[in-house]
Image (cartoon, rainbow, N blue to C red; front, side, top):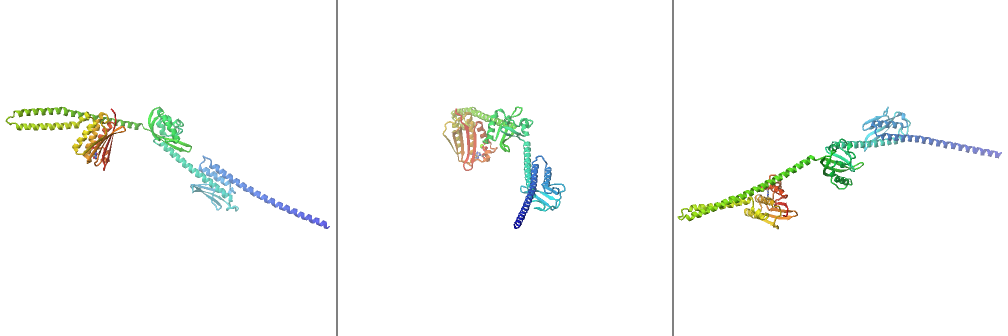
Length: 520
Ligand SMILES: Nc1ncnc2c1ncn2[C@@H]1O[C@H](COP(=O)(O)OP(=O)(O)O)[C@@H](O)[C@H]1O
Ligand SMILES: [Mg+2]
C-alpha cells in the first residue's frame, strides 16, 4: 500500500515535471516566434528603405529628366517607404522652388532635414503624418525612418551639388565655344597633328565650308609644301613638351592651293582627355605687302640719298677744278701780265712820274695773290685733291692739321695703320663724316681737345672721334632736326657702315663709325 502510494506520488511528481517542461517549452516557442515576427517586420521595413534609396538613386541617375519630374517622382517613392503611406505627405524645397505631394499639409507629426550644398542651406525635405499614430522612437516616426530621411537628403545634396558643377562647366564651355567661334583669329585645336576642332574664321581663311571637311585631317595640309618638314618636326617636339618656338611666320595653303603668308602662335593645352595643341593663325598678306613697300621705299630713299651725295661731290669736284684750273690760270696769267707791265713801266719811268701808278699796280698784285690763295682754299675745301692723290689717311692727317690751325684746339690722330682698307669711292664719305664731326666739336662742344682713333676690329675699320666737351644730349642724338647727324648716318648707311653717337656730360661726345673692311 505504501509502495502504491509512493508510486502514485512518483507518478504525480513526474506528471508535474512533465507539465512544467511542456509549459516551459511553450513559452520558449512563443518567444522565438515573437522575435521571428519582429525580425521579419524589421527586415521588411529595411527592404522598403533599401528599395526606396535604390529607386531614388535610379531616378537621380536618369540623365534627360527635367528637375521637376525628378523631384515629384522622388516624393512618391518616399511616401511608399514610410510605415503609414496612406497618411504620409511630403514637401521638398530646392533653391526656393517647392515640390509637394497631393494633400500636403504641415502638421505637428513632422520630420524634416535641411539640404546643404557646399556648407550652404539650399532647401529642405519635410515629411508629415496627417493623423496621430502610435507613438514610436521619434514622435510617431521610427528611428530607422530618421536614418532613411538622412540618407535621402544626403543623396539629394550630392545630386544637386553635382548638377551645379555640371551646369557651371556647361556654361563655361559654351562661353568658351562662343569666344572661340566669334574670335577674329583663325583657331585650330589639334592632337597628334590632326585637327580636333577649328573655328569659323579658320575655315574661312583656308577656304573650307564646314568643320567636317577638316576634322581629323592633318594640320600640315594647311601649310605650303616647303614648310611642312619644319612644321612636323616642331609638332613632334611640342607634343614631347620639348622647347620649340611658339610664335613664328610661315606659309599657309588654302583649299584651292594658293599660298599666303601666315603668323602662327601655338600653345600646348591640357584637355580632359589628354594634351592637345591650340594654334592661332593670322593671314599677314597685307602686313607683308606693307613691310615690302616700306623696305622698297627705304631702299629707294637710300639710293636717292646716295645719288644726291654723288652728284654733290661731282659738282664740288667740277667747281673745284674749274676754280683751280680755269680761274686759277686766268688769275696767274693776269698776275704775270700785270707784273710785266709794271716792269716795263718801271724801266721807262726815268723821271719817276709814274711812281704812284706803279705802287697801285703792286697793290693789285698782292690782291691777286690773296685771291689766288682764297680760291685755292675754296677749291681744296670743295674737293681735297689730296684725297685723290695721296689717299684717305693723308687727307685725314691734313684735315686734322688744318682744324688745329683754324680752331686752336688740340687735335690728335692715333692710328697704327698706314692705309685704310675701304672702297676708294667711300673715302669722300668718311672724310666728310670726320669733317662734320670736327665742325660740331668746334661749334657745340666747348672742348679743349679732340682725338681721332682709327683701327681695325674684326670685319670693320673703326673711326672714333672723341672730344672732352659738354657731351651731346640724348635729345639731340635722336632729334629729327639734327640734320648734320642725319647726313652722317645716311652716308654711313650708303657704304654699309654704322654710326654710333654717345654723349656724356662729364666725358664729352664720342662718334664711332664702323665701315666694313675691303682688301684691295
Ligand atoms: N660734339 C658735340 N658736343 C656737344 N653737342 C653736340 C656735338 N655735336 C652735336 N651736338 C649737338 O647736336 C645737335 C645736332 O647736331 P647737327 O645735326 O650736326 O646740327 P647742327 O650742327 O647744324 O646744329 C647740335 O645742335 C648740338 O646741340
Ligand atoms: Mg653740325
